[in-house]
Image 1 (cartoon, rainbow, N blue to C red):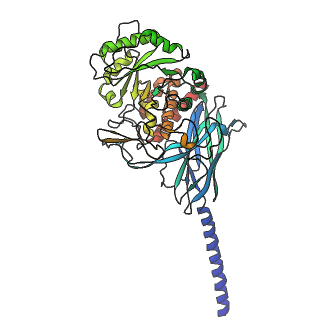
Image 2 (image 1 turned 135 degrees about the vertical axis):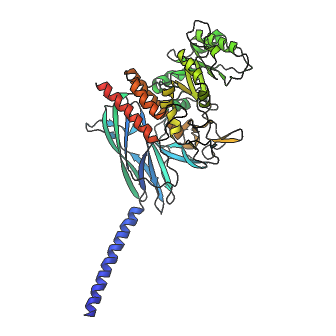
Image 3 (image 1 turned 90 degrees about the horizontal axis):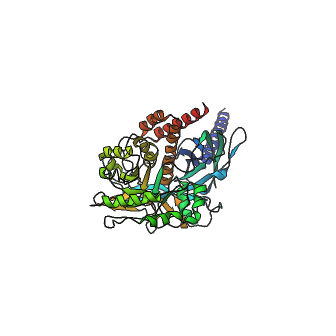
Length: 527
């Protein structure tokens, strides 16, 4: 009898251990697969973040719009090798397709910020010293449409150490002839330890964003002035390079990428007070395409200059007669609101001001806007609570000024002083701008040189992508104004970004506002 009980015990123990081993084997096999999840474009994934739990992403976009999301990939305890990412076509129930050719993939590149921006005691504070995903390494050469291989920084395939993260940026462009409706597709992450898939759901609204942005801008370049590929890359992101563009390829940039604004090659300072002659301005314009708008960035931060009023008035008179506008970075002055010429606007047609200035002189800005002139913003790395375009600030800082705060305040554009302020090794050493013994990481650097990733020109940062999203948000409100629903639209806008001090830090609230604006446009156009 004891032998029988012993045999039963042995058999039961073997069965139990077999179940445990099989279960452990199965779990180990699953545990060593790549861990994959999806998040919206306005989130950041740090190198050591916990993995998300959603593999499906739901998106909405108009025709002619870019809509991004990110794929997070975390390595299991044994790491991953030979990782790659693939996106399918997006199709609807009628078999209509958004081709994968309209979907651009980038591997996000982490760069270390050795300094933090100054803390100013507000709820919009720096995330501090650390690693930030920023530079974007493209899978495909944007000029040749060929897979990039053999560069110092290749996007794929890549390896991951144990428990490390690697995010992938995905840009979906909705072609202008896309029928509205719901489109579905998949993304697939492959590796030496198997693969994982996630689902993409995209609702295409039944309206279209304009190719030429309604929101003006001038993004200055110091080192990359003559490169057509650089200019095209910036135009793709809905910003206008503030450089002298070769007229021989202006038509291509207009028709393909929406170029609409040209900076003329004239400049002034406190010391140089002579305006360019009228004939010289006309000569500079005559070689350009006729359907462009022209401006001269005549002076920068000249509010403390003495006896400059006469000079600026002369600048405006000559520019106006030649068919161009004058842009000045300065605090508006009442004595320059009327130049007594045949012009119906002020001496300075485009006033560019920082957020700290705006907070102090809102009454002067109201006067300027009443004349019909334009006010733009200058992204300030100083000031309390206003959005800052520095790498250690949350992504919403780069998006909310264009589409929401600018609409609330009646602003028509922005000027950014430099996009290519690079160190000797910009992919590995972040630019840290220093002023008054304070550090501003990432200031003046919104693009990366393309040589290390195997392309001519430059590649975008994630910050430039967020700026683009803000310009697209601006278009939603403009469309609603054209449809006669400005009052409702502005209620939504002000609930998200009323001014430079009162704006949401919650990206989900911004995304909800955009969804409401989009749904409203579609419903009005159907009625």
